[in-house]
Length: 407
Image (cartoon, rainbow, N blue to C red):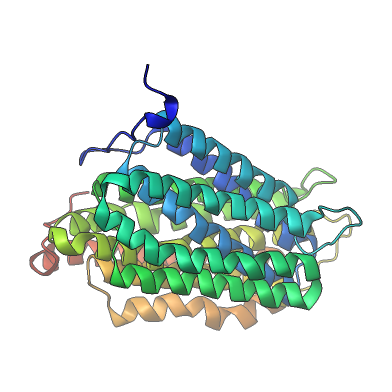
């Protein structure tokens, strides 16, 4: 009988789609992302907002290689599934300790060190699976030789920062992020990844975004933890729902299918590079923007749920999360649009930057008014983008070879 370690991975077909097992894995991953909201909401200062961004980037760019794994081989079969379950457990540990990511304890394995070691396990599983998959794929093995170096080097400052704590931890974890992401981007430029199924690749990124929007909305709705929401908080929750619907509409209504078609029509030798740039550079910040908007909504609802009938202005930290998150989402959407369908208008850029201009106004308004202002803005942007899209998908078709998109 053939031993279990003699088993070979099952190659994914070009028509491969996202499996239920991969969605299950992504749920655990998005749970870790939403725990970043818990971390930042505990003490929403400029420092914690920046530290939250660092955690989000580390998580997002550690998830990406699992998308490539599932695109090359079936992630729900055999040893690949077993290895992914190990990675799932590691990510779950990261999520559990994440709210205390900068709190060192008296034990031998405090929260920062536990987070760093669990993160290293998750990345190590990626590398083991990818090298195993590449045993009969010399081009992929060549890519991995370039990719592995920055990934492993980043583990040193990550663990070192967890041991030192404080400002040194922030600095070293930032360095680890720069080494990991920067080195991986340079490596992929020299040795691009292989893309087998465009549908699987684009669908996987889209599903993570929609799960993040949904989970972020749940997290925002759970903002007031000590009492039932008052009337104003219920109105704020409905405004938060409306804002989230707008974020969903801006990506999934027309842009997502047009981008998938555009990537599919890129010549084979360039497709992996275009897909990697579009979804690696343009897509991950969409999730980051959605997480920050959720944090801002949670802060608004928390303030409105206080027993005092007097509400102070929203404040810089909550306004930065709310309006800054919306700006990150809109700007990232345009970057993604430019890298795929290759059509962006100056008016769209102005609209994407407007939340930054509204931020000083929002921070001086009462919480409910600040959220209402952003919601009205997103409704107007959604209406405007819908009109632009209806015109562009037909006009830009000859340039992007994507054909007109139907409603």
